[in-house]
Image 1 (cartoon, helix red, strand yellow):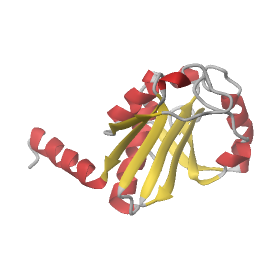
Image 2: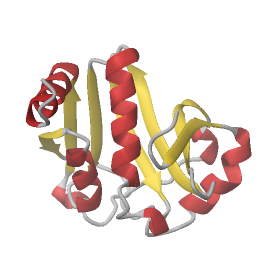
Image 3: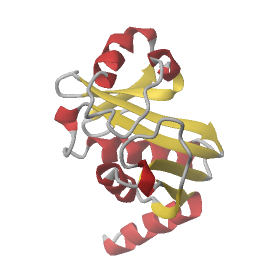
Length: 169
């Protein structure tokens, strides 16, 4: 799958070193619990590479059927460039137009303002704030977790509004 600036493909065993390097950055993992890199292999996780340079940007998750979970993790050097939004929007569009997806959900820590902004730019809306009793809580977990979501009907409505606003009705 390609976007304007990214190539997305299922993560493969050949990506393990790139994943380990990404997950070794404490700032990337600030709001996340580590998991074995092998958990990211398979069709639900997509390696993202910059089309212009071929560099590994990070990964995107689009996991589930009917209701899917959107996730992303990018190298710090790619933060603030719109790549997370670009990849997220592309997966959402594909899921709603040809993937049988009815609802997209994403979660993060309440204090993770950057990730919350990406969710909002992808069209997801805040659904709830909730608290989880973690055995080894990360700093900021006392403020809770947030869930954002977007239904297919909401996405379709927004697409129609964009066409009307652009004069393409």
